[in-house]
Image (cartoon, rainbow, N blue to C red; front, side):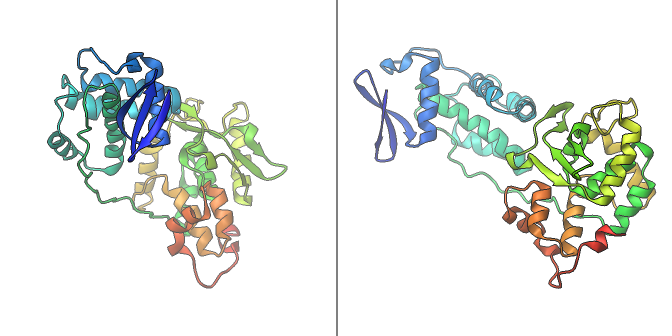
Length: 338
């Protein structure tokens, strides 16, 4: 099997027969074509004599492939969106029946870009598969995706609010919240923390897992696997927690003496705590933003903060938090010593 680039179109030669794949020439499309060829032998002469599949059948094939390459929780997210946003809409529709106007109408059913992008990824891959297998000549996904306004805001707690929250938090949550506020770890990373990763001698914490959707998984990104500094306040609350959960491999345990399954299991207690303290509700993830904003406001090195947060680069950190950097750089003691 040999591939060629003819005016930007991917051509393939199989057994001396050269044919257009009708795909754009790229390394990614070459890999896709090769994977499909390995699954079926119909490429030998490109004569396809099969019944036309439904869209759901092709999307199911894409999901099966993703299950092999994605982390468990990422796959579960794809599967959940398939069941809620794709399966009901495309039921019994043949791949040859779906037109650009249908794509336009389908796009109208979405209200956020994240959900749309994931679903769109599944559908586009399914139609690419249909093109390669010869069921259709062109993909109907020619319509420009709508843009949605992102309402999510970085809204950190003030230094005083963070102290009050930690002080008044119920016993099962106090140390957990303190560690979140004093490390900037993602909530899932805090929940997945194990004692084996806590080094009180070197004052470091190794982050190599997260708890989400009821399962333990690897961290969000490659750069999220990291070793961070244990600040003095964090050390204090971890040692307090050790008195409670030293018998477990996990640092933080719920009321049933088991590890928390996900951040959603904290939602009820967290919401009640903020309401009781008369503090405006924000998601528990804002503890991460609080760490970053307070550190930057007190003149800490942005590169160190970026490493603590597990960002891919300093640019990611600055893009998110540059408004919190003060011109008069001061020591971080204000945040640490109080």
